Image 1 (tube, helix red, strand yellow):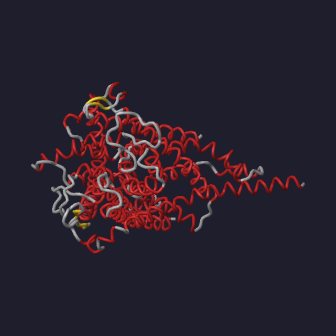
Image 2: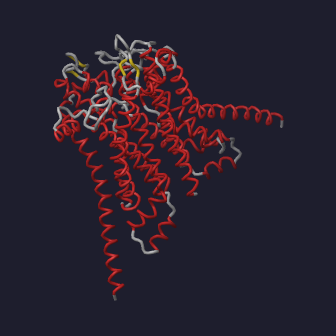
Image 3: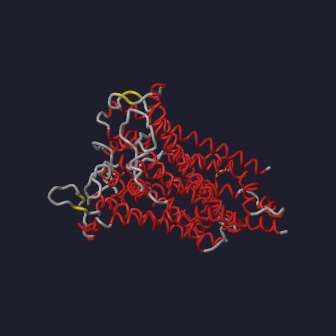
Length: 294
Length: 301
């Protein structure tokens, strides 16, 4: 009798502990969600007023207290294009090597270690590297080209990892089928692996590019300009970029108060762009997963 | 017969050529990593013609533009970086592990499908936007709570970096919790433990090395983050004494000064030396995390 009371008391206590423990976990989740939603709410509510067709389609005027952000949008687009042309093919090729050719061994381990470590190199260090290599040694100057290549190096580890995930998702039976019919390795990759992994690869690549487009530190010294009221004409030109423009409007502007609403507008454009790309990738990924299941 | 063989030879040549192309791209990762280190080292060395390594690493005064006696001490910035980073982890680690535990042990698959992309979205917010929110939202809040003239303090930086380190901590911790064999959990439940006891006494201890690795990866991210701290911490150059003061981190110093410094001066080279220090710090933090994760993977297999 006594023991059973004790037992149920202990039971009650451990149930209470479970309830409270899970409550703490829930509170943690809700606070993270709250922070994220509040961030978006703040940017949305204060930035929406600044956004108009004029804001998106005109150059900055009157020392950047009026006008729009067109050169920054175009600049970010062009830089991201260079980044894509550089990083996507290289990332795909490296992933094909790792997943299809490489044998488990010291070299492969070293390559993987380097990729993971590159992903952890601070973005400003990539910026310094870009200044030495692209701006000075290769004499590309501070330009769209230098900044795009610097961001390309930064995104390389992400692109490789995402591409490899996509290659891994292709069932081995696809490969074995091709090889059994006498195809060479490259024929097998071309006909039975790539067509099925391209959508996944591109999704990963686009996500990496969206992140690159939001980076500031790597482009600050490799080509982004404070204020250029016209559009770039060649890849050797300096450029305005959305993230750098936001930094300038938020901290370096001579009339911060006047610029504040434009800064909110810029931040909102940047965040909408990133969120759209992410949502798109989530949808594509969910569809792909469904396709593989069936 | 011969023609078939010939085609085979040519085909072989093509095959091995293609393999070489792919292999070279694979090797690129090693080349870039070594290249970053080599070029940073090469560009830092001239700084030490005028500055002693001892001054660089042990002096807390950084004043490269002083007309009388330029000074190149790293210590104040290093302390600021460490302080802001530790503050961020103090917040992000418990919260991140809690969210990871919720995702792995409490949430239904449906809820998980919603929360995981949201966490990914958090990782996708550009650091300059987080810094902007530090100026307009979090900073003023801190100023109001602590009655300061402005909120651009180490605390502001820590709070924002916590938000930025969270996704890394959550996803790596969740992976390690999920990697704990089901048999462990089943054994614990069979012995009469409830889910909370199983989580605290069985799963977390079994996944602890991965959780620690997530902490280190989050730390690497916080140490190297530039725009957020540059915009949100006020950038005062003195040695940091508390979380309610302005501080200037290693990354912020490079960002502030590289734009104004004349090329190929001692000051210019010294900024690359700071970059080298950052590279080395994050390299070892990431390497340690990597080794821990590999070990855990092997153990759980």
